[in-house]
Structure formats: structure tokens, C-alpha cells
Length: 146
Image 1: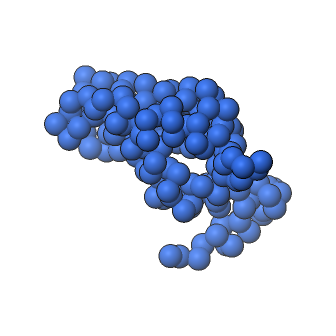
Image 2 (image 1 turned 45 degrees about the vertical axis):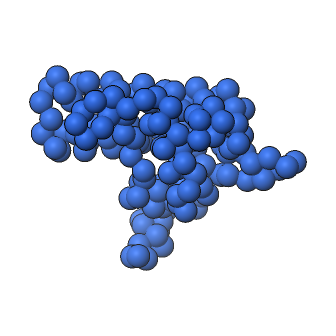
């Protein structure tokens, strides 16, 4: 791993960001490099069952050593919780990065639109599951069938 966090944070401080914001951006950069990608369709382009795609993605997110601290997974009163805003930020970035990947792959317009719509539906299902779970890890896993 490259040790670019310090220099990156220093550059952000030079640009006027405070210490906390600079290190939060470094943390986000680490997350984005290895962020699990949504896969609402199979390699053949067929839709995956909602439950399979959601469960697979949530499990990958919660197992990722950079995502867990970013979404502030913590234990309190016998339950594991995560932060709403950070989780929603991760979901937004997953959708944005998927769009970039699909554009880079040169998907035709109709296939691109279909795949992005499927990805957006998957991301929205995860957001709704998180809300319904009250931002509890165990509740989220239950709601996506993991």
C-alpha cells in the first residue's frame, strides 16, 4: 500500500480544509479504491434476484476493512450500528463508480441505461433496508436476506 494519506491530507489542509475534513477525505479515498461494486445483473446481462444482489453487496460492504470504519460500525447496548450519512455516501459513490465503469466499457446506450437503472434500484433497496433496520447491522442483514 502506498502511504499517500499524509501528503494528501496536507495538500487538502493547504487548500483550506480543516484537519478533520482532510483526514475524512483520505479515508474516503481508501474506501473508493476497493469499494465493492453493485452487480444487479449477471455477466450475461440478466437481472439477479433482488435478494441475491442485495445480500451479496451488503455482506461485501460489511466485510471490507476500509468500509466498516468509514460507515462508523460500532457496538452499543449489545447491537452493532452504522452511520446513516456515511452509508448513504457509500451508496452514492457505488452508483457513480458503476456509471463510470459502464461508460468506460463502452456499453451501448440502451444497455447502459438499463444497467444504471438496475444499479439505482439496488442502491435504493439498500438505502430503504438501512432505514427500516434503524441503522443496525443485524437488522440490515436480515432485511436483505444475508
